[in-house]
Length: 168
Image 1: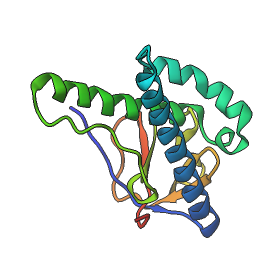
Image 2: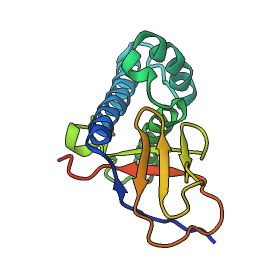
Image 3: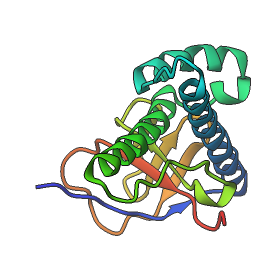
């Protein structure tokens, strides 16, 4: 049985600013990866670039751009996986004869979620267990963010996704 829990975050002002910067940097990574795929396909050789190729480049991107280096490596890979899923859905629709809908560049108001695929790799759920009355999630580059937890989480947290409201 699969369960998903949604809890609102209660970030401080400084953390809200960090969330905005994080979304902007992940959006820039997504758009740059999309542009690279478009350019490679338009090249006369029509080479295709996959997730594995772009994921291997993240290390170099982080070395060149200090803004990208402050965020979690695994969350950046999840952003690239998001683009890979968009292309997989596009090609699936092309094969089915449906209206394909090529993946689009994301504007500031259309990219509002960042995902961490595993707890402990750039994020930590319930990061302050010594405080049993409150729940915090620690996000790399943002800090310990207070979570307004309505009920207890059954089992182990595997994936953390943060959706920032009010970005449109």
